[in-house]
Image 1 (cartoon, protein in one colour):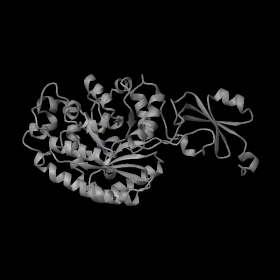
Image 2 (cartoon, protein in one colour; image 1 turned 60 degrees about the horizontal axis):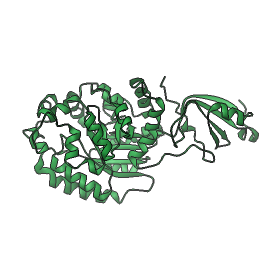
Image 3 (cartoon, helix red, strand yellow; image 1 turned 45 degrees about the vertical axis):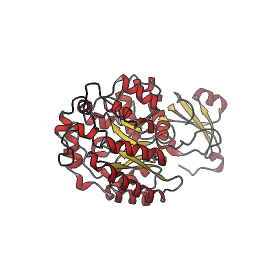
Image 4 (cartoon, helix red, strand yellow; image 1 turned 60 degrees about the vertical axis):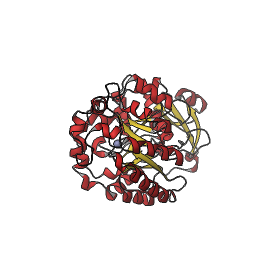
Amino acid sequence: MTAPTPADFFTPRLLTCDLLYTGLGGAQSPGGVVVVGDTVAATGHPDELRRAYPQARETAVGGVIAPPPVNAHTHLDMSAYDFRALPYFRWIPEVVVGQRERRGVAGALAGAQELARLRVGGVGDIVFAPDVMDALLDHADLTGVLYFELFAPKPDLADETLARLRELVTAWRRRERPGGLRLGVTPHTPFTVSARLMRLAAEFAAGEGLPMQIHVAEHPSERELFATGAGPLWDNRLKALMPDTFAEVIGRDPHPDLTPVRYLDELGVLAARPTLVHMVNVTPDDVARVARAGCAVVTCPRSNHHLECGVFPWAAFAAAGVEVALGTDSVASGESLDVREEVAFARQLHPALDPRVIVRAAVKGGHRVLGSRAPFIRRGEAWRDEYVWADYTGA
Ligand SMILES: [Zn+2]
């Protein structure tokens, strides 16, 4: 192949795809983009673009043209873990705790590098330890939110945990850079953080303007725990760290009608508009509460599948007007950090859902979670090759 001449460079190129999302409005199918030089000249239906640019050289690029998708929920500090599929209540003790010596800075930096290589549109990362936060703030070439994780089920630890959080966050926030990584807070789950700490953390996050994520309603055993105070999740609990009864954690008795979402709502936590991660095992009342509160939701389809959690009721959330984003979760349950693979898996898992909704969620929903904005693909904007989702394998 000979080197392109200047005339070639300015010959319009028409790139066509199955699905185009420009970052504005809804996605369209099929779609096309006309590029002149390195600038977008037009977007739209391929037939219209062929009429308007009859001299354009046409290339079918395949699946999707869209801004890079956002990985809205992951655990980069677990990137050195081995992947293992197990029911959630066994996966926590056998994998998360069992491989805990692999958790830390080295994995986090390797994971951050992998996300940079994948040219992710942004990341929502759960950070388990202060040294990991230090390392990611200094080294990661990413945009998004680093959520510092709280894990303290004993109510008598709530005040000292919050005081420590306040101290750490105050120091870390001085190192936030515009366009870089921002600080956030994440109480781990509604059953591993006491009611008192959950409330204090939500008040703190709302007062400081810190984004918040919480893992909620991931596995059916979590629902069972709130209904009965028992079940496999409690039987497999991290015994030394947990109080004697579940009622001590949540400050009230479990009840057949009590769900994790209802509990957080009644505690006042949803009013701080946390992003709720997973939300697989929910009731219609839960969906209505989340919609009323204006919380966004992150789904991690491969992780949910591998941990036998069930299928995220995407259509119910979409019908209620809840913003949905996608995340890979850690490699230990999601298998890879590539959110394009998550999109492809979601398409197979939700065959009745319009694929345009899933692609838009991976871009727009993710940016909504991170409080950022997707680049637009429109006339006059720079064209970037990563807008073609080459790794996207959805059928
Ligand atoms: Zn997670």
